[in-house]
Figure 1 (spheres, rainbow, N blue to C red):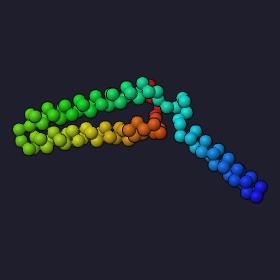
Figure 2: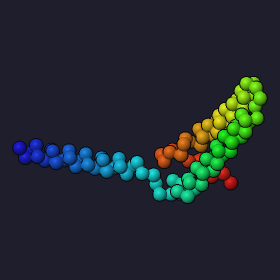
Figure 3: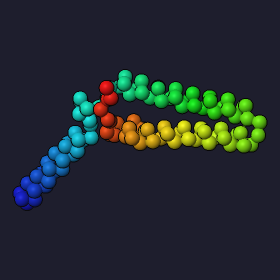
Length: 106
């Protein structure tokens, strides 16, 4: 009986210590993650870029006088958006906290 109690206590302590290390591993190191203000500024800049692109597409669509001109507006906007998608993939995602962040360019 004593062996079972000791074995059970040992197993519980191993499980809890494993969980503690797992939780600690999830949180990024203090100096590696970009700070909130920088992430916020980057996000706002990307939003402004998207708004500008949509406004340009809207103006193009309003000025279109034929289906071909409308199609050209859509294709131009789609090409712009694909370029932004490539940029995001190279950057490491949509700003996920766990994503690797490239070093800032000088």
